[in-house]
Image (tube, rainbow, N blue to C red; front, top):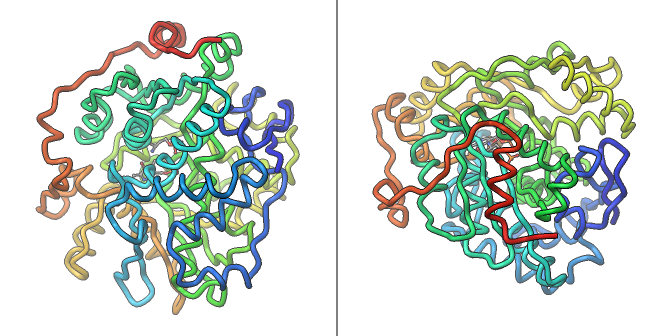
Length: 465
Ligand SMILES: Cc1ncc(COP(=O)(O)O)c(C=O)c1O
Ligand SMILES: N[C@@H](CCOP(=O)(O)O)C(=O)O
């Protein structure tokens, strides 16, 4: 299987190279040249199978001829053995047709663990095969960073540099990045917001000399393998609700658009998904874009769901590529507009096709708090603010008698202050993280300047050209 760039000016790569490349050399994002297909018969045959078995069936399509089956199986088994729930991603019913897909049973209590635990093993496998090292960079609004540090911490072939917005992540998120003590891990607090961190990461990839000098690789959802691993739970959830003989809808709290794009991929592969609903907080660029056809940046607002305080949703570029019939010149034009004026318009046909696939809604912080209170009072279930954003929007976009699954992207204990202020309950950390808040922190504070960050990384990275 070949992987091609959304901007059309980078060479097509095989899976192993796309995995290590992260961002394409033309600044675009990789995706498969064609969507692999899974038939209804194959989906039916997955009923009653474990998460790991379904993961193997789905992921094999993307790594065919690149990762041997027995190696893929062991990596999947090892990755999901780190999860604290036997089902890995259990589905919890909170209403007659309302379900929550709990994606937070991994080591850092957010959905990022699902893909990151596998990504770290895949990268290690390919690097070992080649006898190489890599320098991993990532930008985080709080969850990707902790998950990457946990998954890559202590690995011999990689050094990890995570840029997080100083003072804008929750205390639990910060400590998950700053207290691990791994020698190959560097938590970098950047004086800026998440979009500044993500810009810096992309700029490092676009600085070819720097990129090659430290063998740069990325763990954000710009890396195709992140999306690929997230496709799996759409299958497990839909199958357990009767797929392919019953259509299922999904609502996804959205920031960088990776998680919901994985749902779109599942649909393209043949999973009968009814509605795919984008849920945003006050940073509602995606909801506005679907309404108006204009993608327009505004200053980021700090909310009680900080992981979604994002303006530039990286993976929207993958959707644009699809909506424009995979014409990279349209994507290049849109991205140039975004760079020059902070906005671009989506042409009528492309917008129509996006609206056919997605709905969108936004929430205020007051609505998020009310949703946490209401769901607790009516069902006894405690939501985190990101999941509550999803539930609020799901309630407005559900179809009668049709199952709606909201993705629970984080455990409430990651955001205890917001949860306590909404409903009076302070969600405690699980016992294995009990001492997190008293561990010693280690991080470096950097200006949001490309050269400052590149110099830091060059000094500390062991991978050299
Ligand atoms: C807890 C949580 N929920 C939702 C999201 C949004 O996911 P995505 O960026 O894949 O849209 C994020 C991060 O972006 C997150 O950390
Ligand atoms: N919410 C994310 C932002 C980065 O998203 P990614 O999926 O592209 O890694 C985070 O928690 O860091």
